[in-house]
Image (cartoon, rainbow, N blue to C red; front, side, top):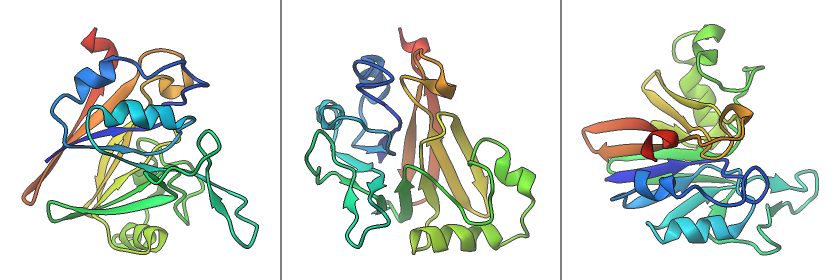
Length: 195
């Protein structure tokens, strides 16, 4: 199964539209996972012309009794949940926008997990506690940095941003996850190379 991974489109906001290169990068994907940073449901509609979409969104009013999902243009979008747990091709994928792992003071950027030097087995437990389930793939966003790292058997993927990578207004990145019961390969695609 070929899955398109995208996050932090920030349209409108960081950009006026999703770059057309995303459609080229996602050619042939069967599913698109959007790891948050969605400012308009029109982005999900645009992506859904390519393949079905599941998305993660932030929550507002977390201190209230009944927090509501982030509203996209004033309506709740059934494609969006605070976090998603998906069972695909014998893998369990946890998707969220902001991967705030307990015991990590830093945002999860390339090299941060290794630099923290947590004891073997602790990351698996931290990730399981975060999602409330065992996952072997984590897809997240928010940092605007593309990242693919494996720790303790967990593949962590941040596709970066197609519109503001590393907080710079330019063409950025997306990723494609090639998934089967025996493998999980990720390719980060620099959209500027698809012109």
